[in-house]
Length: 462
Image 1 (cartoon, rainbow, N blue to C red):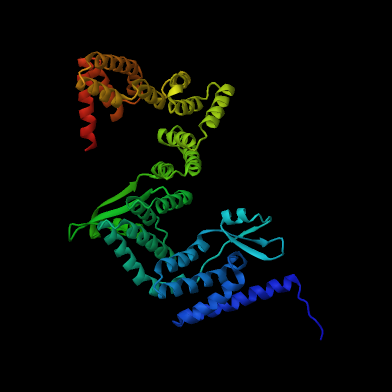
Image 2: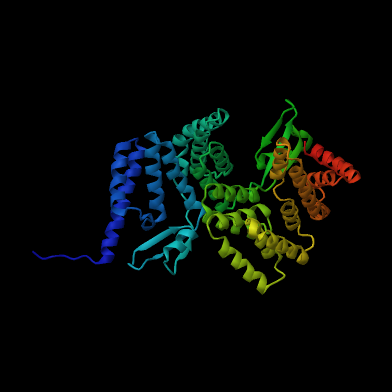
């Protein structure tokens, strides 16, 4: 018998054709309501391709997500099914990078990140428009409504873990229908945080940050003349009614822009990572955040503390010392050096010097004055506890020594607190600290002046 050997290229063609046939059969089966038949066809396709979905051309990949997602949905596995269906939207949102790998297989990478990670060179960008999205609404809408209601009910009932899962599920189901509403991911992140499911919360915040979500958006409202109620509208409807003028059923047209929460996303998740002791990730995220929000005290502190707690404080201090040696005008590195040094009691004097170098270069650098004030104050709560303990033990001389040392420290902190207030006079923390220092140093006139300012700031925040 004559043996027939297929070339590698022919094997690839046969492999791709087999998958295409099985996936097309899966689509027909799920459209006919045959879940078991769909699962059988999908299983055959997956057995051949494994995780190599990049070998499927976009139209076939869309069919795979469609059939598998709906089969899972109809089997009651809504969260998993939603995640597959949502991937159809990713095919529309991202460029498809097409080319051939080292084995001459034709490859299709969805998005630049996947393309870069592949290492395949010479890829060409293409676009793809899904054509199965319109077929999803009948199956997805009822599940979407139920998931959304479950999410809010669970949140109100303080069942936060369930709420987080249901918000995430709602997001994916809505995304499958073509709407990428990332506020649902934010809801999921908040719910997971409240439920102390930190890994899940971190994952949600990372998704939001990586997607470039800022929370900035416009809402369109107008008052219904008949009911008097203020109603939200789509932009198109808003513009139509507004152009109608007096003939419109609406009045009091308003457009409101929500503020950016991008910075808060970085602050929250860097802190989450630090608390979860995922220090390397915290440092990386803090660095990314500091590129967007230079000199942010929270991100800087998280970065410094993460280095310190990961046992790399000495290395970080050395890096910073090298930087300021090369560039003495690098006030940020002076400040970061001070942050690292202040965490070691033996380096308190060095920390003071580093912070002072920072304001020497940049006289209005508030974070340095802030840290100098607290550094000079020392552990004030401990001093008060020690004083009370000595008084209780009737060791009056020791108690007086503690109080005298405390007064001296507060007096040394005063000039830095005044500088903080000088450059940040509407900061409630600065005002409250300075008010307390004036009281401790018996400057009643200044104390009364700052008390009035403090009361005004607190009233403005209500």
